[in-house]
Amino acid sequence: MSSPPVPDDVLIERLAAFQANGCNQVKTADLLGISRGTLQQSLKMAARRGFSGTAPVLPGFNITKTTAVTDQNGDIVREFIQQRPEAGEVFDVPAGHTIKGVSALVDSNNRIVQQWIKTKEETQTDLIAAIKEEFEQYRGAAKLVKPPKETFSDLMQVYPVCDPHIGMLSWAPETGQSNDLKIGVDRVDAGLQRLISLAPAAETAVIIQTGDFLHADSQTNTTPASGHQLDVDGRSQKVKLAGVQLLRRSIDYALQKHSRVIVKNLKGNHDPESAAWLNIALGLFYCNEPRVEIDLDDGNNDIWLHLFGVNYIGATHGHTMKPERMAMVMADDNPEFWGASKYRWMIFGHIHHETVKEVGSVRCESFRQPVPKDAHSHSHGYRAGNSMSAVTLHKTDGEIGRHKINFPRGA
Image (cartoon, rainbow, N blue to C red; front, side):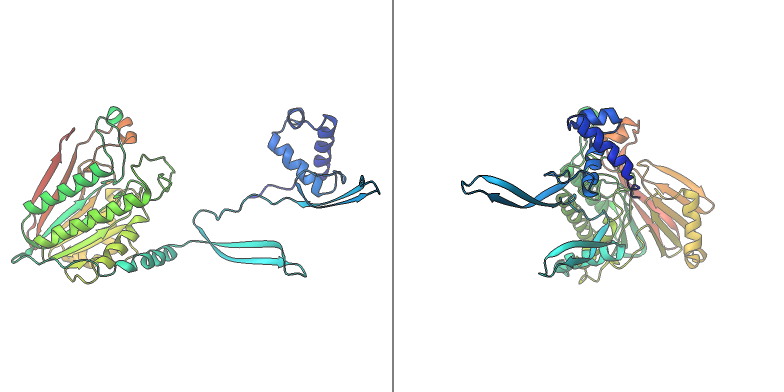
């Protein structure tokens, strides 16, 4: 909200004090009990309202033209100075806005006298359209992977990827264990490779990325909602490229073992916008691969719900709801799945450690993150271990097995 205009009598008082103190801004500001910046703005406003007379150059004005009258000896007899208010501050488009249009007031010579810039808030639809346009060049770029010879149609393999925070920087002397872009990518990459090799050849695989896949959503290196400063290794584009390549390799690994691969990217509190462009980038890349299912037009990147036989599976990041609310969402959002299921399982991350809570018939389970702690988590006393898991579901028998890859401290 803009500040109310300063009254004329206040401007006149401040101008008089300024002149009485030999035009010393610091002394005048101290005398009036205001900041030097406030005094400077007051002097500019006083000049524009005509209270400073015509002596050049008035505060807040620029000289636009000078004219001199000279005598026969070439000496200046009289000088005329034209001045106009100086330009304001450089206009910055507000965060989250785009320029909608520009209007201009022009003089008789078609020269600009004044301009008005109109902005509009950038919507999720605008963002998705821009992302699609950017990634269109990669449409169908994936090389088709030869399908496995045999898979088990009554099995589904679930690979939760929880809170890898790709790009997070951690310094061992401060946190006990180092992490950077390369360490994080290599650890998640190796973990998924080992889990896929250990898992049975289920016909269907689900790679469910539950959010906070990237440590930071933008070059600001802050959390979008709270503005907390983040320690990030590398430029934003470099981190994003490494993240896309990591997921692409993971999908290719899964295609070698499973006939069908479902991929879902959910929003985290660190990277709420990244879920949309990850789905779009990977969806376009694999659009000619019928064995990969990625819904690039899916706008619901907060919650994922799926029915496999009598298994009703859900996933969310965990920063927007507690387990009790997760169970309610599963029942309310898809009652058909609820009615057809015997085993109900909700996956989440966010808290970076393992928990299991049964809410009615829903098993709400959180998973560890695969990478070391950042400075914030370490300073708050969080000491949970690091691991990745894979869970095998049977179409009629529910969960029948799981594998876990642990990452010992210092490894």
